[in-house]
Image (tube, rainbow, N blue to C red):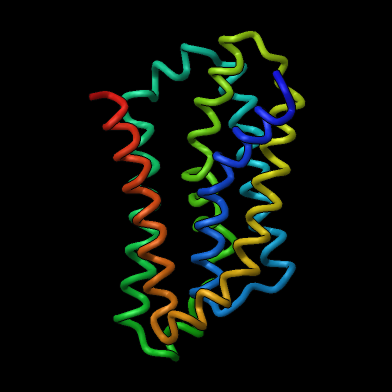
Length: 190
């Protein structure tokens, strides 16, 4: 399998990571490098691990989750995006300043899981065609790491363009990614 092909797969998988980090960066008016690196480590790490798990588990695991993996990703992204929308509309500035950091804890874990479910299927596909997995998984993880940082650092630009409703924009981006996952999956079935 050529490096260009692997890089293309990695870039496609990393687009969700980029969009989520862009939305969070826009909503928070910028992320420190520490927060961006933490988010990138989670996203890149989950992409790498889920690729390995998919390759290792093969058809058995995919058969167990295939019927609802797209719904799981949608639900996680819609839940977090809906909360961001609610917070952008229904919370005062004082309430917002007291909320937990969105780039750590359970929220970050759920976002990393939601953005890496596709990597599970890619790992399975690579296993089926007999591809060695360590190099592709590493490229996928590193690409997701890098594009997460790019998204986090471009987020403030999007935030300035969106003005006071940057958090609303971030929530809509997350829900949009969830809808995209659903539409792609359901269209593929038809």
